[in-house]
Image (cartoon, rainbow, N blue to C red; front, side):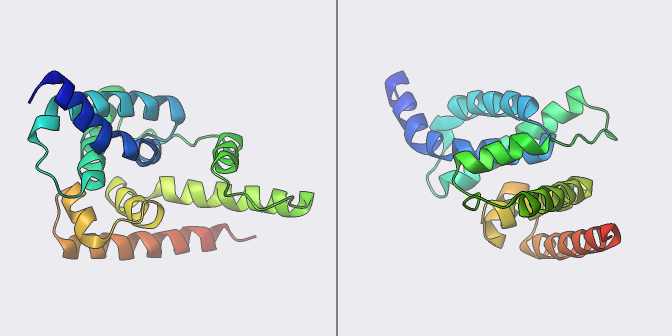
Length: 179
């Protein structure tokens, strides 16, 4: 395929999924700047591999590349025990830009929502990486079990098990934080 053909194919296969790629990278790395680095590297990898894309689920293909890129990046740039938590104001700003925030919350409800969001984010980030990625791919990106299995390279039964354990761990963590 020609270079122009590769560019056009990249535009149609990869670019529609950049928001999902960034969101997954952000959950895996824990902050915006690192997620941007990961997505940039993943895009380069996707462009180099676009000729080998055989069709099918483009979103799962892109997220697989992002996942592999994120773990490679984390292995090079972070100690295994480091866990970063993005600042809540940045998350809320992103939600407002995507139109997900309720109209004109009261100060009390906004404060409670901020506290709840912070607890949920901390609980998600505290999950073991395999559970966190499965949870994020299912609950935030809406992938089905088969797609998650394809992205993560594990059997569907493992995906189901990881998702169940992630949900159970989240509930336990949040319950422990109840005032």
